[in-house]
Amino acid sequence: MCRHSVIVSASLHHRYGLSLAVRATFASTTPGQREYSDTVTFAHGRMESKITHVIENLEASSDSNGCLSQANRNGLDSLGALLKELIPYINDNSVSEKSPLSSFVALQDSFQYNLTASLLNVYKVSAPGSPGSENHILKANTLLQGLLLLHPASRKLFSRRENMNLILSPLRKANNPSINLSISLISTLVHILLKNLGNFRMFEKCGGCTTVIEHLNLLALEQQNEQQHQRISDGSASPATQHDDDNPISNSTTLSFHTAMSNETIKLRASQQQDLNFKLIEFLIFYLVDEKEVNFDDDTSASKLSIGSKTDLFRDQFPEIDSLVENLNELKNV
Image (cartoon, rainbow, N blue to C red):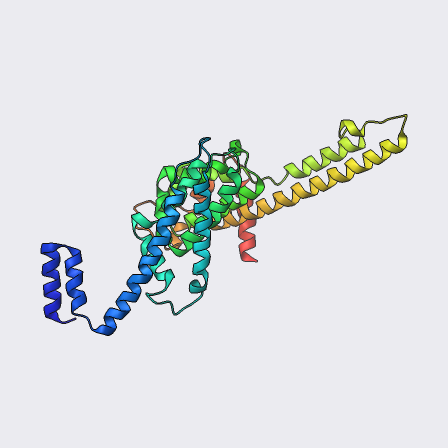
């Protein structure tokens, strides 16, 4: 664009607003430039329409019982489909302005089209214990992780106490989350905290350290296993295993069946708890770093903490934290 066109455009913008300035600028472009601009505008408009449809559903009112409405669930499905459409472009290193991915990321900078902000409504409506809430939160977690990877700036939303608590609340022991949900929420927290110092400090202010570490249980399952075997050997595992002198064969068969079922249940619980423990160890390795050695993306005045200062945040709930940190350091050096 020539210098004269720039001056005219700036003058029109000052007097009549952006749209007239854009028209003046557009009039000064070549046909080839206008064709490219038309293509970009068309792609941008299509993405606007798709995102608007998703947001309208995600932010729709809950049903009469205060649970997710059908519109909310449709919003989750539509968002999943939209992110799936973007996968081929994520792996393409030659993505242009015309690609859906470029339009999507650009629109996420706008409050009006930010999907992370709208997705938070699902967490607000999916109160722990409400019908289907766990499945909805699991799906929302997966979508949120994808959104934060595509648009890291959306992490700033979690510097607000209310939003951070939406993720921590279903993880708290009092709400009795399943192991699968706990693992999913801890993974989501990593995506939220990644390279964002303000979110680290808000996580701590909301009691996040206590909420996470209370799920680490290295001994309980072993003790439960011993107790269960003791009850079985005493013949008191359940009323069905009590001796029936009139039918010793039936009693023996029932006892064997319940013993096998009890053993399978114990193995399953132990395996699930081990998966959760591994996820917690991964989180602690991620969290317990000297922040002075990390380059954070957000511009915040929050102070940076040492490993020792962060370790102290776990001590009341988990006195063995020092021993655990030593073991983690050994793992890092392997």
